[in-house]
Image (tube, rainbow, N blue to C red):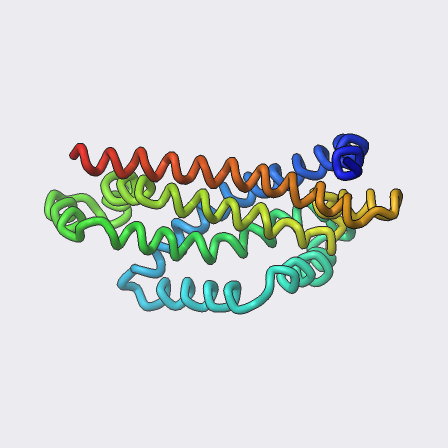
Length: 221
């Protein structure tokens, strides 16, 4: 009963927090999607320079914790660029850079899942490499990657919980503020966990639904 009371009392603050979480996650994932495509293409490119750029980038990002990346951008890079650091911008940059390293691997796997004969056929018809990617390979690869992209979105939502360290009032930070006010950490964090669980469950169901639809589509071909 106490949990329901805490949830009812704290709902406005927690709703504000979860909306911030969703907004950061969506913006970051869109940017990571674009950057991930570029890095994915670099990874499978025959150019040693492009391949090296993507390899080093992915190695650094995946080899360091997101919290350290957020600190580095907010306390290290941002003050050099601007007099006043915007926590929201820094948060989006940190999540984007982190997610893009993982997205690039999703794109690499998706692109390599397409029959190489399609690339060769398009090239023989006079289409350039990047035009073939844009018109032939990527539209098919993205369909294969949709469930993995939604899974990455779920991971990104959970990753935003550490952004309170750079003054972002997302869902977890909202919970911390409520605890400081009501001194009921057990019930408050249970309410926070419940809101995360509901959101993640909805996204998981969406991912499974899309996966089933795609599987049916492949069967009917």
